[in-house]
Length: 383
Image 1: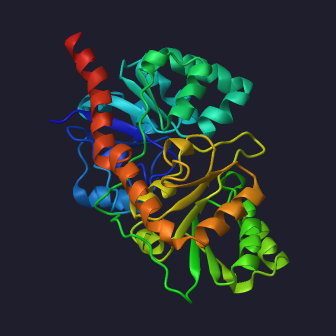
Image 2: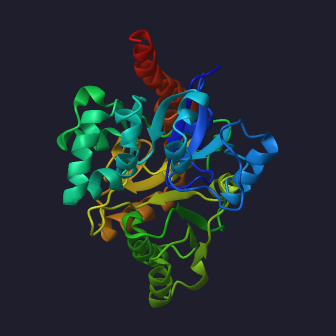
């Protein structure tokens, strides 16, 4: 039987972390929830749940079929019946956000289960600013086995916070290159140049700056359109800016598109924009997965010199980078790239090459497996 890893993250819905749970060769993933899964569904974990029972649990949790967990177990289940750990052949636990990990430390401290922790952005930038957060991270860094920041930028941050460098392994989020094919962008004279941005409608995505910059672009190049895909607390602000700048139908806001259909939106666009920035709390990105996906489709990108983004986008090679929160520079870059469609193919080609080389999902999953092996095989040899 393959060794089993418990996984915990903010949401069990399908998304960019699903492959790290379900597709690591040689390991079986079980989703670990903090609270009881459902008071309405009594499925004993003392015995392996049937496929139909697992399906019922997944539906209750709104988990997409594209990201099927083999099993789901709650922390309450384990605390009530610690024997589940042995029954389920648990070999490790992987917490996918550093700020969530302290609640699961007892699995390492009490049950000697290897602990792996990912850091994705806010958990390394905002969480440590709180006194309790700093204290919890100090204990976590001492106790945990390996830590997986999603970029070198965050690696430097957690090492500075006290994480032993020998425990750090950068694990980029990977892109499924079979799902996102390379299609060089071309512009037909007389047709609109289409800009695209995707992400949660929160301050650190920089979409307010993007709307302002787009208003400048439209004055210079009338045949342009901006599509914003997402939802979040800043939506009312964005709609107000669109009215203020008189952009009308030139800016389209649409809610989240299913992960299955998102590639269609990439292929319908010419230029991808990701003007990420540090928000008022100090919250930063790792590397936005949407930028990787856009680049995998051969689309040129415009982004910022923020956090780990320069590890992905090379200025004037695979895209354009501007200082974060610089609306004037963002508008200038958008105008230049919109005005030079002959550059789209070469930028897109280099973008695809970069993703293939360093952000290939298959390669990242191989690295994840090797990181698990490093600890789990070592532990087994010592027993």
